[in-house]
Image (cartoon, rainbow, N blue to C red):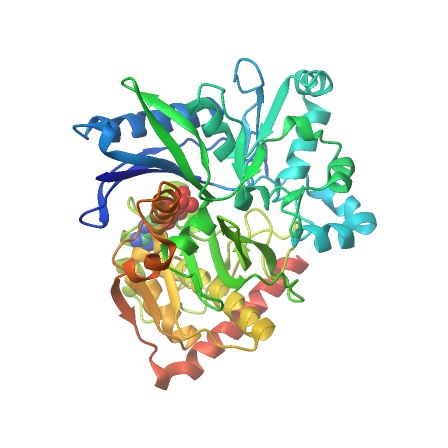
Length: 490
Ligand code: ADP
């Protein structure tokens, strides 16, 4: 076997990559954007048909570039998590747009549910009571879309996260499976049993028969037939968990931060299910064979999305990468702080009602200050999370392994190191998420060994903290906390 292919179906784009087993790196990739649909304030959707069509075209383009698809060991899948798709069990036709993880349409419902079931749900799932997770989105679809209600009653429907939808479509409806990391984000799976929990299913009124079978991350989920050859679909994980594996964070205490649309930090807890007292989620990091590793997760909903907002809505620049030079054109943020709580605040604050805020505007505020404040906001959010992880574990992380689109921003990475006082380690391979799916596929198909994965990682650059300036950064951080407080109150 010469290659592994991975699909990385992200929030803003879907890509396929070709990994060369001899060179041990990604040698080709093809990405296609996914349109975002905002039907109402705080509603976020995507077209499920587009998700599949764009994923398929990226995949086919990669497969076409290989002279013999018989050289491909398998296709791994990683995906935006929590996003829910409902489709017809017989035809595979989506019955509504995909309800995206960022969507807040069920915030009120989750608040009401919290008083009665908050404790039970947190204990069983490790999650916090928030509209972010899949269960309330599925319930909304059943309650609000007559066709979905009818088909649910008749057992003619499938509900699933994007991994299960893609597997279903790519196998021509033969396989209806999800992996344990994606399932751990539905709010329907019990962390102890790694199976759907009857009480949770009944709280949300979701029939088990409508949900995919839960399998390990390295399990074979079916076959994709291409040019008459069956290629195994093997290696599935939610994007953040895949990045944890892709960054080689396989030991307890190792952590990674992904700076994408949102900002997600995962901390490996090995086999221990620890429920956080400070607003972290407990989730499944990965399950490989029988070996399960849990993880703490800090999820910040808006990070790179604020850079996108500056680019697309405010028109400050035409390329997200330009934000670096613009931020560096001013010596500091000019007293401007931005909390981009466009869809509420996630970890560690968990406030659905919060909305974004800009503080410290003066007549002298320039585009550069605002741009800088948006980049700094990502670093402050990451510090919020490392501080909490330190408080929970009592251990200061040795370094922060970074990835995601915005980790390309050198200003941000250096600012992060200075602010957090720990080295920021950026890998040579930026596509950690796709790489994680490649590794899980490699292990599942027997062309890689779990014990070798951590050695595959190469550092591209270490950003060392400027120790003499730490006080200055801590003052900035205090101002950030003040801005967060205002955005929660107002
Ligand atoms: P996702 O997988 O969530 O779709 P990516 O990891 O591809 O996201 O990252 C895309 C995000 O990163 C976008 O929101 C974009 O605005 C931001 N981004 C990309 N490049 C840069 C950069 N050089 N500086 C700052 N932000 C960036």
